[in-house]
Amino acid sequence: MHSLLQITTVLSICLLLMVFISVRRAHIRVEYSITWFMASLVMLLLSRARPLLDYATRHFGIPDTPLTLFLTIGSIFVIMFFRLSTIISSLRDDNIALAQRVAILEYHIHTLRERE
Image 1 (cartoon, one colour):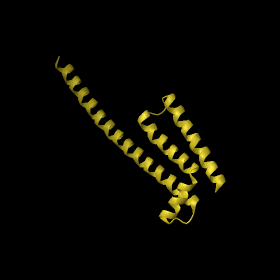
Image 2: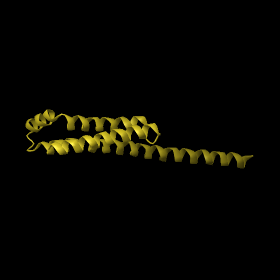
Image 3: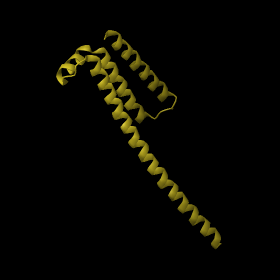
Image 4: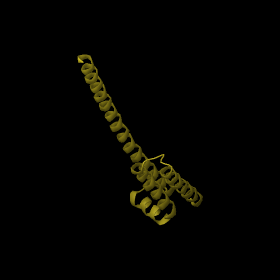
């Protein structure tokens, strides 16, 4: 279990660094980086707080502490992916509406040029 927590710590620190570098280079927007930042902090907290994991294992009746760690981290990332999916869906709808407005404007410009 100790080596698993060390690996999770290293992975969470790598994720934190990747998020900071991506924000600095403008590869990811700040409002989306906050979600990744929070997820990596939770991973780091869980990997460094063994008593917290043991408490959650006992409290929720999960048979093994590593399972608690991976269920928690997996749940966090499923929620993040759902959030990002809703954002992408919204952006797709906005793009369709924008394309329709541009088409209407082009039609009006074309009809105004024909009248001249």
